[in-house]
Image (cartoon, rainbow over all chains, first blue to last red; front, top):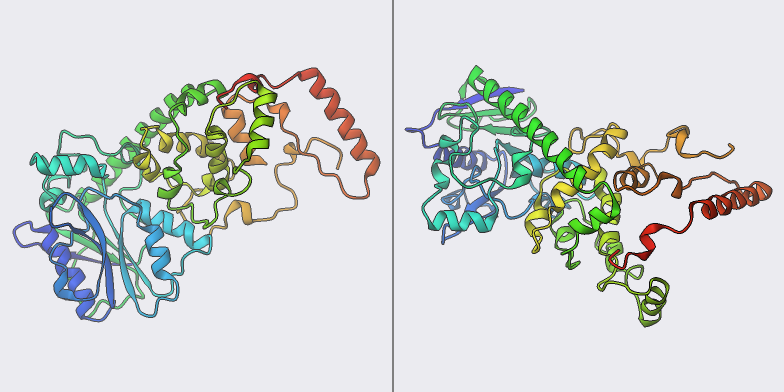
Length: 372
Length: 56
């Protein structure tokens, strides 16, 4: 790994990052870059695919808002991609992308993954309000939050407050701003030729960065353990789970927002869940009364079983829920023990095989309690 | 199976309600035995308490 620093002009971190991305384009390292840009109304940032270096004026890879997990977009972009494209992603997006690569939904061949530091984002609706009220300034966010703390009064998305991955891994390039005292750190893989890129000075991660990252990871790990144990108590019986999911209208927004749920034909939209009059009457007669729509709990349990092992905890499901059900936390609480049981951490390693696609002759013998 | 069992356990579903037995096509007698065993166990456990819950 090669390390560089970019000295900023009077602390203009966003300007320095734009300059770096622009130089990646003009020097030919990449032909295009996928990067969040501020919308004209300034109330949101959306991913844009930029080929013209002059059209990066509103780009800000550090803005504290992301309305979607861009991994799914990148997966679509990556298939049959004819040229090198840099994709600027946060840790949760890179980790989801790693899972999508393993699920054969994305190809890395022409992707240059550019990871950026992140201490968390605001829900888009909160962010828009904050912009209108003048409570947040996307341009100075990376300077104000460089010590790892949220400089505003508003809470970050819940998933972010328990995220232990401020610095992304499995990237070709990392652009770091945490603990960098107003400058930028660029870590690049050795096989990436950045000799034509301007503005890169020698330098590596200072102690201040190491400390900020360490502190964040520790604090977040504690917060995560506390949130999960509290939530677990609230769902330790099916009745209590039904209580948590009581307001679910089965809109399936959580599935739509999930970067891992890539299936074009989800089982929950297929014939298994698509009942007719005869079936409804059969259910109703058997139980005396049934709730409609049916299978809300089953829908969530099916999702846990299908993508739980690859759930990276990005929390976009929770943001997409119109009923404010803590689905993200529910998934984390239900899937962590499963991930631990398989000693699998989603997004950790490109090479680590997916547990459910690996056959081992002798595994979990305790589950088969009959004769062999 | 490991995933389903783990998830249901956390949600307070009795573990003995979910079974896994490996039975090959040539083990007809063993298949019969297991079904008998399962039927007896089910009679002992009684109906699933969740069945009366119209919400699930």
